[in-house]
Image 1 (cartoon, rainbow, N blue to C red):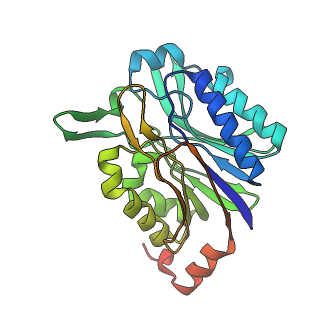
Image 2: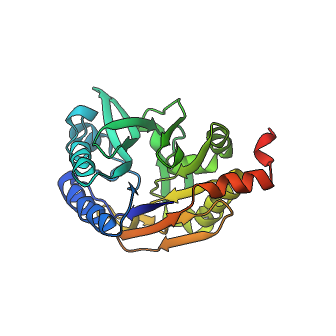
Length: 265
């Protein structure tokens, strides 16, 4: 058994403000005896303005937010998954990257978001992430002290084959740090997360951005921790904060032995 905490933020375009808010909530999770702490998508800098991102983002080695979180992980001896931050790979190349840090403050692996959010929700609400970010092309999982974790980000949630591949690689925990829109969130968020949990018999950890941001965009919030049988174990609707749940790593394997659906295609 171990304790998992999901942090809900309402990040803006000030990396120092976002770091300080994240730090306060990580400390709150530590007080709740979390072993693993996860932040939402674009925790450090919430923007879809490519010029702004190119100006303010750096490599991993120079990133202020990442280096600060690594130090917190080391100081408190906690595993931390930064849901995602924007990393500059080259002069004009950006990726949306999820980064796993161990309890010694060392980066163990990272995942670049594969599926870009290119959608036309209405005349006034359109998104074109592929014009901003370069898509990743590798799935990533890592063996934690409590079992294997599979990494995804936000829009990946709509592509079930990715989650099946991760579960077939042995993942029993799946992370979905997100910044879901209010429009799609209220229609699909809960259903999609519960479906990914049930069809793979995995725990789902889904920390989210939530509320009205500085640029007028509204994210759905509703950070969730979902059990492998689809039960919502804890939810934080709109406010910034932390949810913490004690989970049983044996449960996914027990459910898979009873209903061996993962043995199929």
